[in-house]
Amino acid sequence: MKIFMDTANVEEIKGYVDWGIVYGVTTNPSLIAKTGRTQAEVIPEIAALVEGPVSAEVISTECEGMVKEARELVKIAQNIVVKIPCIPEGLKAVKILTAEGIKTNVTLVFSMSQALMAARAGATYVSPFIGRLDDIGVDGVQLVANIVQAFKLYGIETEVIAASVRNLEHVEKVMLTGCQIATIPTKVLAQMIKHDLTDKGLATFLADYEKSKK
Ligand code: E4P
Image (cartoon, rainbow, N blue to C red):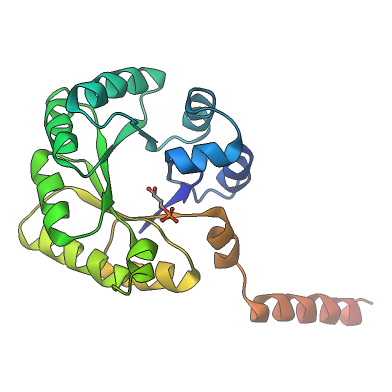
């Protein structure tokens, strides 16, 4: 499973790029609003930091507007993926953009049916939202597992991005689904490297080293 960062914060991304673990980045209008900057400011900086796919979301809700925005977004850098909402106009836009060779990430996916439709329209990626489903009492990880299994069954090449990841349990459960990518917020990414036994073990090794010094 590849790791994407789910943030629009350039400084946060810089820190983790140094770890060699960041394959791509996903943003959305809410994440961009949190930075206090504009999409036009942050997306070029993120696309320069990360070699892999960087998702930037359209704001239009009509096919024509989405396609126009997408064509502008991909001019920013070769690794831009256009995030399109999973609505009928969105699917029409995905069809047009796919024919033009523009990569798309269909977002706000909450069901198997939506995932199938997005894939058949030609989406490069689909993003089922785990945490938001959990919030309404539906098992989000199970949806990811079901989509991955169905896509495999039918030879669908669209990749699945587990999104709306809220905790370590989500990460570790989606790892077992065969999901190609998880997009992970910085707070959860920071927890992934931590284990009390690592810290205790290291402290012991360093103390023993001091003891053994002649
Ligand atoms: C990523 O593509 C999504 O926009 C993001 O994971 C949504 O996360 P949230 O449900 O925590 O806002």
